[in-house]
Image (cartoon, rainbow, N blue to C red):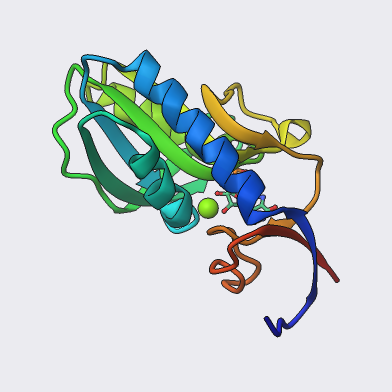
Length: 174
Ligand code: IMP
Ligand code: MG
């Protein structure tokens, strides 16, 4: 495919599919007998979410949330929810699904918000994890690939809104 930047392949579609199947199987084991509620963080999670729900062999309900977080002098941060979930989750476990866990600030604010609104527990499911960049006190409960501190695109991840549709993950060579 013709692209605007040079993209170096990091994860092939086969490598992605294999790990998504594995994570789906783990969730199926861990949630057996329960209903799975997955909330994807837009926009980046949409491709991962579509594959993940089909890799889970249990009843699944899904929704999406869109949020922007602001961080002032306090480390806690405020989240401005642009598009909210209408799922009923009081007393239930929510799986919060992200494309990539970077500093972790956004997910930690969203997790706290969902707990405050009555979720029994919030599990973090992320396609990619960049642990070297973490500043918030949060870790992934389920993760497909840990990567080095590189800027990557594809499989939902963008660079200025481009490249979300790549079926592989690549590093943008600027
Ligand atoms: P944070 O964990 O609150 O820092 O925010 C993570 C968000 O930053 C992700 O949902 C992505 O939208 C974006 N992001 C972080 N690293 C990358 C990357 O390598 N490529 C594309 N987007 C990224
Ligand atoms: Mg994102």
